[in-house]
Amino acid sequence: MVTNEKVTHMPMDRQVIAVSGAASGIGKELCRLFALRGANLGLIDHDKSELDTLASELRSSGVACSSVVADVRQGDQVRDALRTIVGSLGPIDIVIPCAGICRVSTIDDLKGHEMEDVVLTNLMGTVHMIEAVLPSMLKRRRGHIVGVSSLAGVRGIPYEAGYSASKAGVAAYLESVRSELHPRGVSVTTVFPGYVLTPLLEKVNGLTGGDMSNGKACTAAIAAARIVKAIEKRSSRLYFPWGLGVGVRLSQLFPPMLYDWVMRRAFSRLPISRGVLTPSNPLSEPAKF
Image (cartoon, rainbow, N blue to C red):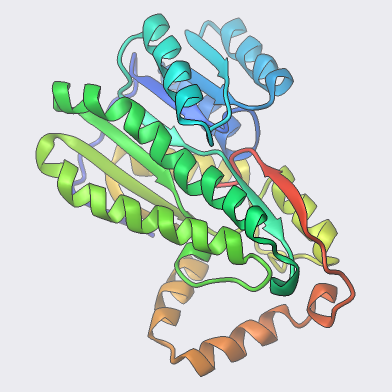
């Protein structure tokens, strides 16, 4: 489901696109699709080995790219990384903060410092990326910000309290800045994915003892293709998969008692809901969404 500000397709040939969380999952698939469209790519990730592998793959295909290792929780590292990318490729036309982490745990096992780490990575990592490129975009009166929230940011999901809260923050932040920036020439797209087959989802399933997606996850390549289409149309919001996106949005009309019942039913099949597992392990999410 895509909602549009205006349906005008934006060419990507020679566009400079900066992606954090570029070395895995959706981030990697996005970079591959952008490369096919002739874009110049700025790649940011914390995993040097995977980042180097992707950069080598893209360069061997004739793609102009600049890759920088950075921790998105650190604003100074993000600014330095984007400064390097701009020095190599030119001003950023599209920025996609796609890096994040998730911690799966029962709420009584979730510690404050763990919650803080999730928020710093998912929410502040998005803020740091946007903050670094915004002055140039505003000066040129053009640019496109593509932020990744989640359907879990629309309605909270059990055992992912930190992730849900951080993604709700991303959605609210982007909603706010979109109304400010649109008259100033900068577009904002917020992406709300459901479950996507990435290394992160595999780890989540391992820790919860079941399939969180109930067999309804899409591949990272399909997710990336939908996001690219939304970018080309300058859509304001993208929800997928379609059926789940509609269901989650309609659930906002549910009274709390009904929503709680639905969630208990949906997650009762997982061993973690019966106290079999109470994991509280950091899970790397290099571009889950």
